[in-house]
Length: 582
Image (cartoon, rainbow, N blue to C red):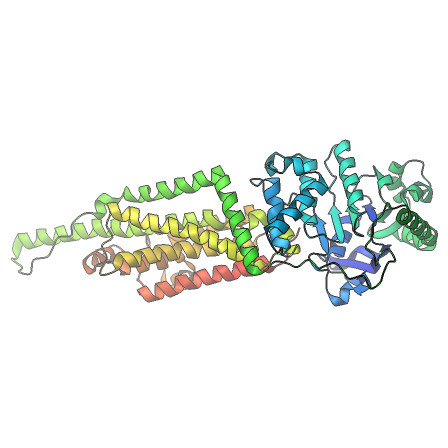
């Protein structure tokens, strides 16, 4: 049984405490199908999230099977299912793949046979077997709601919470979904609570909970609803609520609820006796020594990690637009860099050891200075161009990676997915992109404009390109994890990349008073400075002749970029663990 005793949920508004849920007292037995209805803004979804544990109750207590959830912890992820209004599946995947991924993430199965059996059972239960191979993006609204249910049923939850799952559907689809929820409540003692604004098909529910301004105005059989509110038609209930304050409705209900609860108990007894409600032996009054069914266990870190990573690659390769964009960037950006190769290929004149004096020495010095400026500017510019383009790639890699799927991730986290497994799958996926982009950029550009480094200079250059791409990818991933929307994350990441060039000092040196504060945060500077420091002495002198920015040591550049990677990953870890359910 689910029981709420004086449950409240309070927020602060304009410095005052406001109860969005105010002293709700209800009892819901096993095998019960209840609708939560009321005008917009009355607290329906807030109450559902409070029951789910997404909103911590500000007062009162929730009990599940006699266990005080307020003191003994929330329900196990396998015990509860939450079906939100939004879609919880990825468009590029098929119905079968979506359910399979949900099963692998939420249920620890013994073998493939058990996995297939569970998937087939759930698909049949919600009526999706015939379209199991169909992609999510072509499903109708009603089919997507069925898929959302299927992805929750994989763990056989005993408490199923549905938030506006019938909104936006045509009348026929709405009735089919309500009928499906009704049938789901009739097996294994499952409680199904459904938030709905619609007052249609109420006869399919066991009870109706009417909320008004966060308070209970009615909770009883659907056939008694009109009588209690003294209306002729159910559609008149909402206008009737507005005729009295929520306090008066709540007070009235507390005085009259016992006869209605007695009626609910009688109806439940008749349903059990007629065989219309199937309960576990203990719930049905059978053998109290009957062993409990085996508890569903959540898979370990490695299983969740591999499932999430495999799904991410599958989504990537099926998104033709994203694949084309990545290939275009991968191929075109290095070509842009090579457009400046001619100046970088010039020869720096050697000063003669024997100065002959006169006009020849002056001409030789002028030639050296001219070559130094030309080659130094080109080499410095090509390195910075590579760094900035890789920073752009990094922003494109990860700015939307978490924020773009935040609702789905929060839903999966609620279902038992470990944030560490989720983040590890993202880091592994992005690391592959970083390796491909950085190595190709370094090797391709070097074919046309060989890197003039001292011993091991080209290898150092590759390391710095990898580090700057990794640092910016990690930082943008951290931004993505901290932001609520993909648009916010993308905009902030673009600004971050946009400031890399002017604040790097590669083009114009910043004032020393400003540079000391900005330089530690500019990844582009450390990658550029580290690569320049690895140039052969003659070329390094040429670069120094055209820049006024001091160069840090190679070791300092490496340590700083590694630190940037660590900061980005730490921000991503904090963001994935933080509750951001809208």
